[in-house]
Length: 64
Image 1 (cartoon, rainbow, N blue to C red):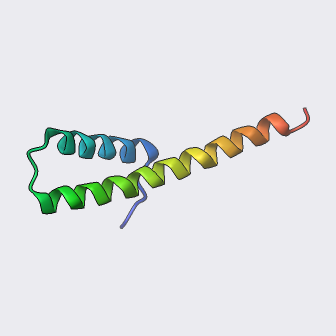
Image 2 (spheres, helix red, strand yellow):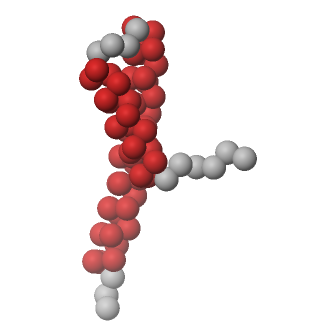
């Protein structure tokens, strides 16, 4: 079963990737793979945040 990761899980994974890249002790090929994974995770997190922002904005637009 392939379950979708939560926003928090993606964020934690992204933080680990950034930490490994900042360490600088990663072979070039692995560095490129980590960078690609990081970019993909960043885009997923940004998209999720954008969706939540739109949902929150719709609440404020609703008439009570």
